Length: 165
Image 1: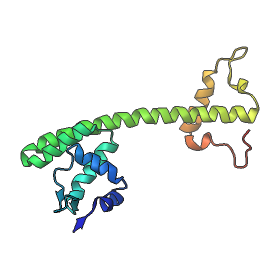
Image 2: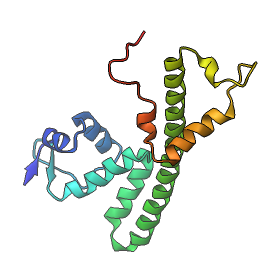
Image 3: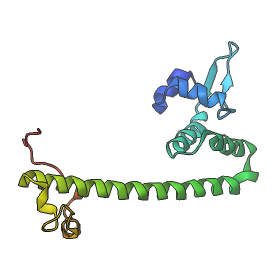
Image 4: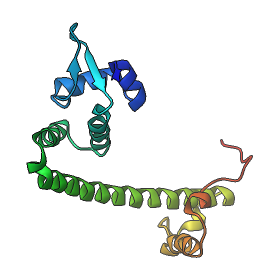
């Protein structure tokens, strides 16, 4: 079956402009053109397109994606290179996800901090006596709630119907 650029864009939830950009950057050497010069995509092209979209979403630069597609087009002699490429980017993505998780964890702790301050009507409940420094025991209390099974996402949510100023 043959697909237009618009149909492919719809199936992949990306814009036709993005597909044209990928083609201009050399990522679509497998795509045929009809006699009028319009791109015509085949069912098998989706295998490559899904890889391209995945790598782009993983933060791989377009030039490196192009290099990977070139390896794919070369054939079986590049299997190890392709495996190594994906292995490297998997490790980078896992590291990025770990950093993002740490950031999300901190954000949730701060939401809980401000929720409890809102409920008390003052942030000073979290301070060391006589200072405006946050008592480390406050963060430890949050961590203990999480360790005891509380969902950190729920801990920071204000109760339903709470008015926002």
